Image 1 (cartoon, rainbow, N blue to C red):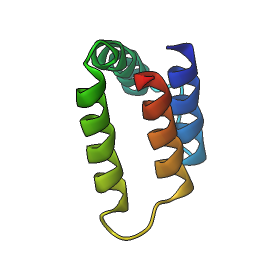
Image 2: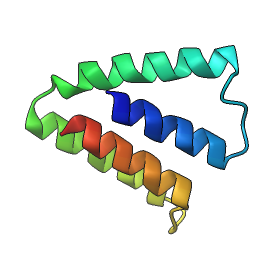
Image 3: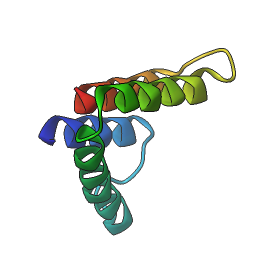
Length: 79
C-alpha cells in the first residue's frame, strides 16, 4: 500500500540512508508486493506473522523508534 511505502521510506530516512538508491527502490517495491501477498493470508496467520515480528524486534528487551515504526507499518498493512 502507499502508506506502507511512505512509512518504509520514512524509516530509511531516519537511518540516514539514501532513498534514491536503486537497490532501496527495488526493496520498497518488493516490500509492497510481499505485504500485498501477506494481506491475503488468514487472520490467524496474520497474527502469527505479526507476533513473530514483535518477537524479533523485542528479542533484546527494547525496541527502537525505527523498529516500532516498521512494526506499525506491517500491522497496518496486514489489516
